[in-house]
Length: 311
Image (cartoon, rainbow, N blue to C red):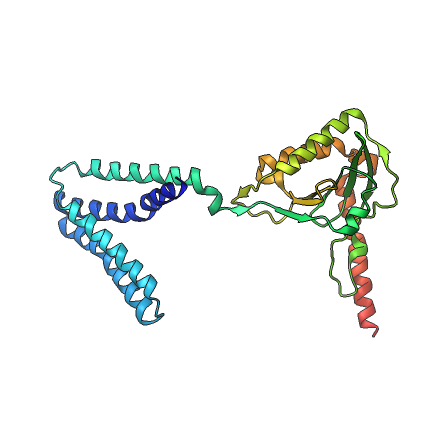
């Protein structure tokens, strides 16, 4: 059924428009006083197609594209032949009807196939758990790790939760600046904030219920798509290690709210409901943190440059 629908959409959006153009130009040529004008306009398209087909064949030796061009030309000629049979002078009705039909099919195609014409949002990575990771399970059923930070990897909150014997435990920490990750060449690389030294604590019953719903949402999350490019914003990374199933799933959900990704925003909302508020870790506003981190990074880069100049 899906293949039939795909063929129908191909006909509606790639074949039908060429036929309609032939019908419209030659119906206008037959039923208006500007016969020569519409004839010249109607011949421009096939002339261009013939030129491109010869170019593809002679210059690029692309037989497939040349054949495709000639196929489109044949469709156009078919439309022109049909257009010559229109005897009504109400050509505007023919044009309006053709445009409405074309727009209708384009709308159907967008609703059915728009995902394939857009960019995949974020990233979904599914992998088997390694033996080293399984040894770190400590009898837990699963572990979820959540990281939220800005586009420069500053103002980072990280939280991990584990469920064991129907009890959910958590640990969380905060990293204000990531300037220490600038190497001697002046490049900044992402590293995970150190959370291993933080002790596990029992999560409240209310947040434990959210944590279990979060696990379910991460497991069921499916690829979303978008058409926008975001160069700035924030970063959200969620990973699930299911120790019973021995599987791992990592989701990059950065800028979900900016792009309006509904599925990712549901996961993001639950994540923020579980995580300790930002004010738990720092009393500084985000702007002050951003300014402070920029100063630290500039000082680090100046130190690197001074070290280079001294050699």
